[in-house]
Image (cartoon, rainbow, N blue to C red):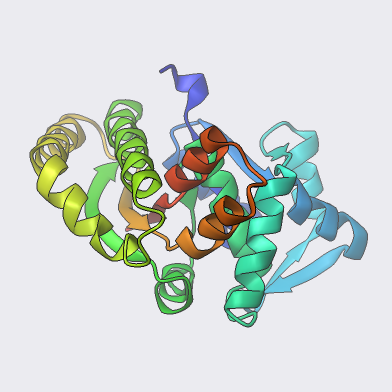
Length: 249
């Protein structure tokens, strides 16, 4: 994995002003910053949007895009559909922008960067998110690479586990405990490595990294029962259960 393959999907809180966006660039160690195309289209149409009381203006965000500092990425239609299903399931208690950003981050297998503590609270309260692990890392490439490789491995394990147990209505309930038991040593080792790397480098900022499991199984199970997706795609959706959320400390 090269530096060019690292980065983060931006929550809207990253784009409220230029200072926040510049802080985000430092925290991902000059990796790419990404925005779901659906969110950018909404912003381009309305010019000013408000999410969780935060106002985001098109003129500023479009400047980031024109300068190549923010990359607008197409959100596959399937993930947009899942985001909308979740939106109705939680009776709009979680903004669609948050759900789209979460699904894009899991699709790209990158962290979701947020400066808003309410982001995780809402996922816990309404999407059944459970914390698998937390760690802190200085915002340098080597430490972040270790944390990201752990995330991608855990996501693959989560996908395999859930895909085999989708018929079980309680499959998600045992996921976090299962991963902690079978990958606990790996998680501890990566945590120790990240701590050592962080101590050895100058500190450009500290990121709190939280590995969380979102309960997407009811939606995925419905797709499976309707026979509208191939088994390979169903397993990919099971992997999207695991989200890595990054925020400054």
